[in-house]
Length: 375
Image (cartoon, rainbow, N blue to C red):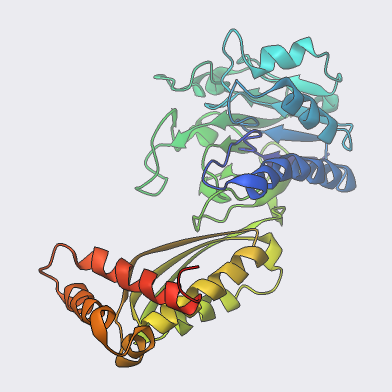
């Protein structure tokens, strides 16, 4: 008889999002728990036999008790078994989020897999072999015991681990808590459910990362999913359905100003107008624009900041190229015009160490002028 389960990982409940201040950051933190509630409802709707959480359910062992209790409440829509594996963020230390959770008296269907021993049940159809982390970085392979683990005849063997598959992740990925890329084959696993990499990825035969279910950074790594996995028997191929779950969509944009206007940057943002309130956007601007266009850009960016969930703009590569019309708008004669001309010369000089400051001064003068001058 087939065994169907939901594979998820890297919830990182309690993640601070320090780079997103105010209400926007608070809403990102709350949404991670709300997404757990959506996962519970999905598990109930699909009638899965279990939900396996492959590490880092919590962002740290220091999360508040209130956060733990809210997470437990979010699980209630699914009454089947939840298997929680301690990861590197929430390792099974002597005093950890898991020891505190146990003291809260969780429901019987919540299993904390903090020991390397088989988890049985499901009428002998399946056995889950967990490889919990007891510290943030383990020097030895915690999945090695899978190879010799005794399981009932005919049971589907499912591994559960958190770490980096050796020699398989992209080069920029941090290699820690390494897992051999042939572990599923060596241990006779029908499926190895992994956490740590935040994107959905089949990394080796019968070996999958589910990624984080709620996207949390600007990276094109296919995050924001869970896996519904169905396996007919110990030697049967896995059937994996990748289900989108992320509420917020994270976007990283770049725009080069080539015609002296701010159109390229604004056009890039306009592409995300649909469901703007669900978007977390990073925009990098480069190139040169006039003072008038820079002033208009500031007005338009403020409008977009109010529409998006969060907008971060990196404009260190954007510089002002004052036009004659810009200078005429500032002043037509006298001392101010002379100062503007000198600032313009400084701003245009690659050799002048004050070039950047001159550009800022010109911009401030123009903004002050457009806003009506000193009051």
